[in-house]
Length: 170
Image (cartoon, rainbow, N blue to C red; front, side, top):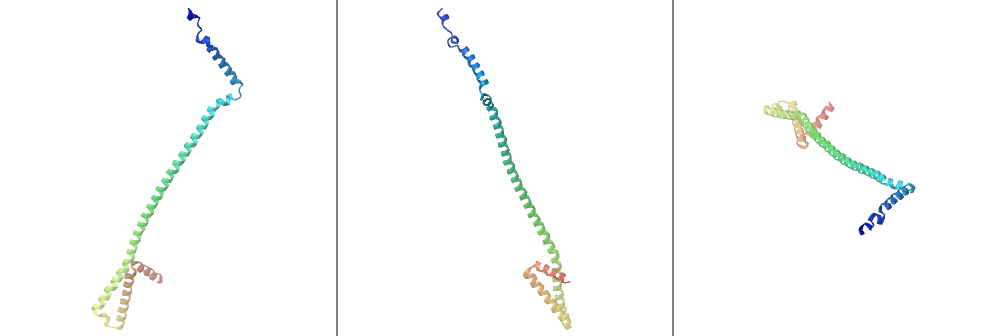
C-alpha cells in the first residue's frame, strides 16, 4: 500500500511535460530567430566547400601527373630523335666513305698505271732512244712522285680535292 502512494519518476519530475515544453519553445525559437536558417544552412555550405576543394585537389593532381607524363614522353621523343640522328650520321658516313673509295679508286689505278708504265719504259730502254721520250719519261716520273708524295702526306682526301680542281679547270 505504501508503494502505491509513492510518486513515479515521471510524476515527480514531470519529465513528459518538460519535454513537450522544450520542443514547443524550440519550435517557436526557430520561427522567431533570424539566425536559425543560416545556422541550418552551414552543413550544406561546408559540403559545397569540401566538394570545391576536392575538385581543385584532383585537378592539381591530374595536372602534375600530366606534366610528368609529358616530360617523360618529351624525353623519350628526344632520345628517339638523338638515336635517329646518330644512325643517320653513321649511314651518311658509310655512304660518303664508299663514294670516296669509288672516286679514289680511279686515281689509285691511274697511279698504278703510271707506275707500270714507268717500269715498262725502264725495262725496254725506250727512254734512251730520243730526247722527247726521255723528257716524257722524266715528266711522268715527276708527276708520279708528286702524286705519291701528296697521297702519302695528306691521304685520300687531297687526291679528291685535287681531282675536283682539275675537273674545274677543264
